[in-house]
Length: 196
Image (cartoon, rainbow, N blue to C red; front, side):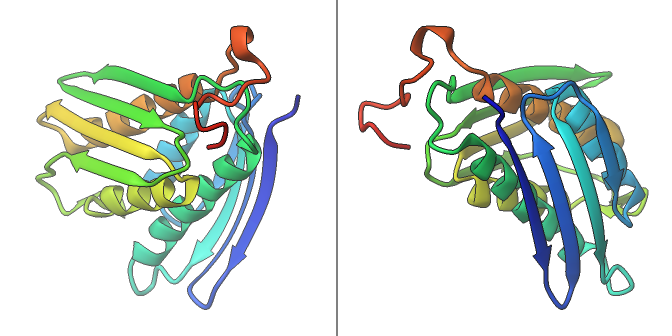
């Protein structure tokens, strides 16, 4: 079973293409105009073992908001499309990840319903050329378009780079766990409703 998707989104503000294979080995090629976001998406694919190709351009001469949020939209949509009816998946995933002095907790439910909780405070306006306030917007857009319940919390942490990196790595591990197939229920929808 190949669980993969290709998506393109073009607006007056951004142009994004994503090629995702959930059954990957972490091969990735990330190309956006936001260097620090490239780094985060690169390690997201590596730690999630997702094969991920991303090509994005956007109106970053205004600021980075449209590009970051739209990347969350398309990446979330790509996961939703790749998982199809979600038969056989674990559905739930969680991970607690230390990144030096920072600790991130991420929990996710591929429930077919959107809910989002984000608890992290940043001290800097930007890390590299990525606005720290947009970490919320990226993952909120992901959760809306993947139709998941997503809980993100960062405890401790002095360095905003470490906090953000912990979020992306923990999210990758939690999503990887949720997407993995349960060998005991390989053809079953993981819900008493019979649909997700």
